[in-house]
Length: 318
Image (cartoon, rainbow, N blue to C red; front, side, top):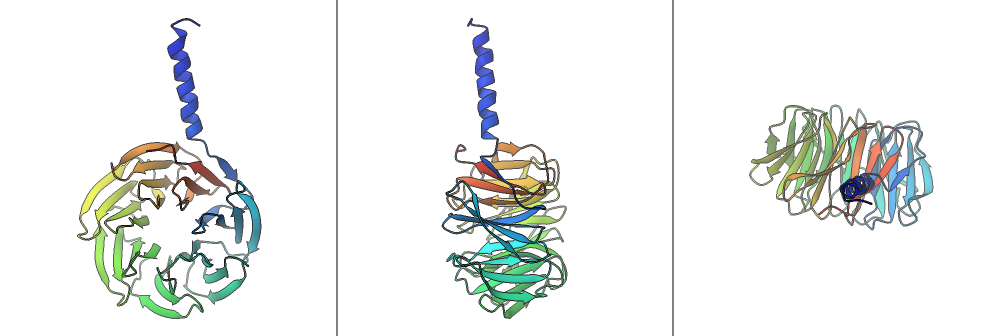
């Protein structure tokens, strides 16, 4: 090998390594329609995915995501999914039904038909697991339920379609993102809006809040991610890089990485501290409908309209 070919070989090797880093570890197949949502159990041992086919699939994470069980909920698409903080239950939402399952037996513990007049877009437990807040894409967009029997506790005065809603870690607020291009913080007890985050030019499809409750992160169909000071509501920065609208966001549990995805199939990793792009896991493909980090922040799951889930290793990124 002469000196001229050495740089070429090095570049080919580097290209190969970079390609390997941006290929998924596993592709999970089995759903008959697009995968709308997935969630890890708090201990990271189990992954559950929900699809437009109305089926929940349970995967054994340690056994290279071996399929464990299939739960058929009916003909309605699975549109919401979340574990309780204790990990003993999980909530699932369909076109108009909210359900609670036992995480060990997978038996239905509670079922609320017509929880919303349209599909249940999100369902999240309060920090003490006593309550669930659910959102919807129609009127009565935010509801708070007692988590055992699904008895309605409160209805927040929100008429606009709501994509996501969750309790803050201290339980004082409910965060929501909406189709009026605004994210909001609600007093969890009174149901009053106490903070608004306005600045996007299109629907906000996803919202996250850092563990220290300092930074709110929003992703919009205007193709941007915005970082906000949660206390003051001040806009800190705008991250641009997607060519199409952002369909989903995820924040790693260690608060180091943001993952964003678009309807064009692109997936981008961002360094939260440096507030800059780290790398692109995917440039294009089938629409990404949901992103989820594992509890140890080492793995990212992407749910796709092509009926599959992709498992990405994100430990190589600083």
